[in-house]
Every structure is written in structure tokens, then in C-alpha cells.
Length: 205
Length: 218
Image (cartoon, rainbow over all chains, first blue to last red; front, side):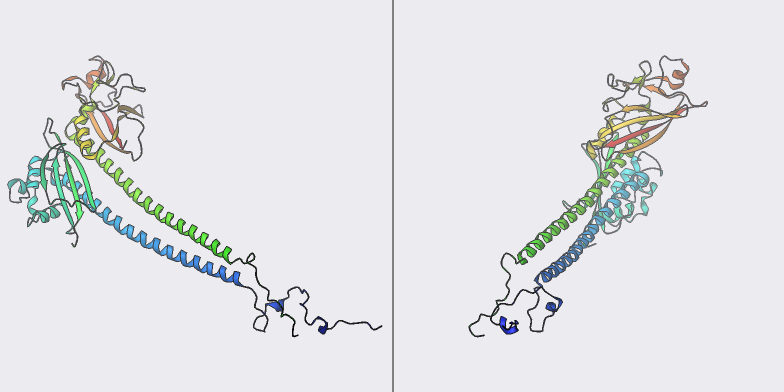
């Protein structure tokens, strides 16, 4: 009895026997079925989306920070202008001598009248300010640039004693500073006043 | 050959198809990152705005405290507030009865020398809480005498001080505006009672005190 050796022809028409995968299976383009790499493609797409997202998020955050900085810088500048104007009023303009703690009534009334030709204005040194207009006079006296407008109000808790400058806008970035003051030699219930300094940026300046 | 079915192409079953899983997974991650980025931006913007607002509040309060001291000194009320003392009772005039740790005011009374200044300041800047202390040197150490105490300073508390030189001939001030014994008379025993600061100088100066005003928003 002849022994039967199995040949290739013996398996013809039947499904191939199981064979563990080998490295040659990974070669594509040789007529064999390409490997299933859909998972790699999805991961690659995902990574690309993440990178794109992070870049765009960083860009948006950067733009936001720049815009916020610009806005708050404008607000801080107006705040500083108001602070500086208050210090100049209380420490220099409305006192007889720099360093005095009480305001001089003559200098204060002369300043709020915006008249540089009066005797008090000359005595208090206000003639050096440009009095072409009330706003120009105020900016010159308070050392503010032309991009700012300012309003000053001097009054007590329930009344206004003096006012100078245009009315502030109802909305927008408005800096406000208050300074508590007293007049030299004043006594009684009207002894203390508050100067309200309102500074805002003029659009188109 | 003929009649025999071609080898069945290996297909991935619905159960084994992981594309849906990966897409869902990536969407969830992207959504989480997006939410994180939005929260980060909102938090960053909020913190910056809050920090600027806090800084402004403290700056305004600091200016108010300095103005209170400056105008009080200019009007003579700071000195009067330091001399607003009942020597025989060794406490501030009309101080609140037996407060926990001394003889100070729980708030600025209407008859106190600083009252009109504080009222004017609050009318323009809004209500604030305030402590007023007077500090002086005694045997090389700093002693603090409370004048007004409204509790431990809160958030945004600021402090300003003003140095005052008391004179030997400064007189005790009473609520009705009258004056009493001089500080040197009290120190020497010529008048009954005592002042809370002892004479520190041999000349006309009596002592150097530092008035501290602490403000914060209640």
C-alpha cells in the first residue's frame, strides 16, 4: 500500500488551513490584502485635531489677554490721571504754599472761576495756565493730555460749592477720585468738603 | 475550481469595529479640552478683573485714610482727639461702657472731634469700618492705646499713620469744647488723674505719638 503524501492539490477548493501571521503579511501592494490600519488613522486624525485645537485655543487666549490688557490699561491710565489731578489740586494748586494741609479759600475760588486775570489768580500763580477755553485751562492746570476731559466738583455732603469742566458722559470708562479737604481757618458745620475729580478719555482725541 | 466558493474575505463584525469608540472617545476628549480652555480663559479674565478692582478699592481707602489724618491735623481735630480724655476715669470721654479690653469707642460718637471728618468722608466714599489707635513709646517699647475699635481689620484693610508732637501745655479737651488741665500738670500731679502717655521730654515737648487710622470695607 502506497502511502499518500498530501499535496497542494489536495486542499484545492477548501478553505486554507490556519496559519499564524508572519512579517510577510504586512507587505502591501503585492496582491495581498492590505492590513487593517483604520485604528492608526483615527488616532492620527485625533492627534491632529488636538494639536489644531490647542493652537487655536492658545491663539484665542492670547488675543483675549491682549484685548483685556489694552482695555484695563486705558482704565488704569484714566485712574492714574485722576489720582495725579487730585494730588496736584490738594498739594499744590489750591494751597497757599506747597505742603499746606488746608486749602486757601482765595486760591480755591480763583481756580474754580477759571479766570486768570483776577488778583487771586495772579497771587496763586494761575496766570501760567492756558485759559483759551475752560477745558484747556483745566487740562493745563492739572497736567492732563488732550486725550482726557475732566470735571471737578467741590461740595459738602448735601450741597455743591463750586463746579468746573464739562459734564461727564453717562457711560464708558470713567475714573473717579475723591479728596477730603478743609479750608484754612474754617470752623463750624461747613468745615469739611470733598473734591470729586472725574476723568474720562475723549473719543477721537 | 468552478462551483467552489472563493475564500470569504475577512470582515470586521459590528462588534469588533472600534471606529465608533475612537470617535466618541476623541469627541469626549475634545469637549473636555474645550470646556477646560473656556474655564481657564474665564478664570484668568475674572482674576485679572478682580485683582484690578481690589487694587482700586485699597487705593481709594488708603487715600481716604490719609485725607482723614491730613484734614484732621489741619483743623486741629487730630490733636483734640488725642486730648479727648477724662483724667480721673483714665478713659476717653463717654467711651463705651466697659468694652472687653479697654476704654475705647465701638464707633465714632457724634461729639467726638473726628466725627464731622468721618461723616464727610463716608458721604463721598461710602460706608467703611474704622479703627483708630494712638501709639507711643514707653520704656523703649511701643504701646498702643485704642481710640476706636470696630473689630479686626477685614479684607482690603489699609492703614495710614500721622505723627503728632504733644506739648507740655496742651490741655485736656472736653465734649463741650472747654479745656482742662495741661499734660504737664497731670504728669506732675498738680491735677488729679493722669494722661495715658507720660512726659518724655525735658523741654516744652511732652511726647511724640503716632495716630493710626485703619480702614476697610465692612
